[in-house]
View 1 (cartoon, one colour):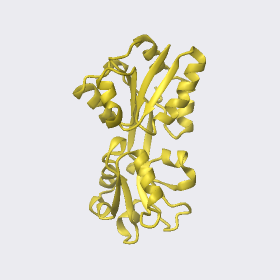
View 2 (tube, one colour):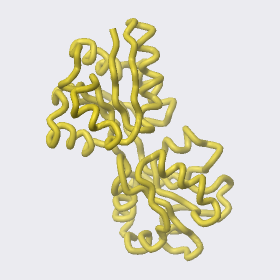
View 3 (cartoon, one colour):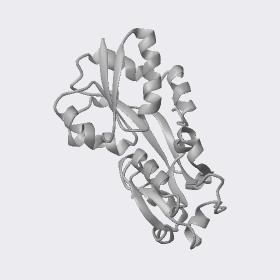
View 4 (cartoon, helix red, strand yellow):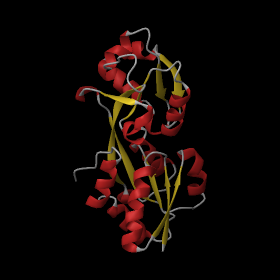
Length: 231
């Protein structure tokens, strides 16, 4: 028995670790193909795969409503990520929060304009009502979590901070420090999964989705910085 799962980049990390536990328990081999939706969507449209995993609900909305690819009642949240500010290791600019990003002329920003972080900076800046000021500090855009991280590594000389997910600090702790936002400025998005209509074994695919809501799975997601759903 085997399942093929298509996933976006960072959500594939806890997903793979959870899949390893599932394989050991039930003897089902799980292949995970990770990348931006645009990279693997043609495969899914061609009838390939059993499950999809994405990092925001609007992405699954598109797969469900625009492409009619998933079985709607199998769609569940496996964890949440929250918005934070990341700064260079040691925080050389002494950045304390969103007001520093908005008010200081010596701070340059990186944000993400695609995938699960599309509009994240706007959501945070709009909550603080400093959108014009934050926009004026943006000097670089990523197009997904991994691309944003790679741009972070390549821009040490001219990018000081970024608005991203908290899991960056768990996955890449040597490359950045995390500045937490106050609760009223935090934005959360759901990492979610669903069974594809193209699955060759719906019962096993459903079983894996159900497993992603168990305590074993929640422990894995928690370890990588996700907040598991309470119910």
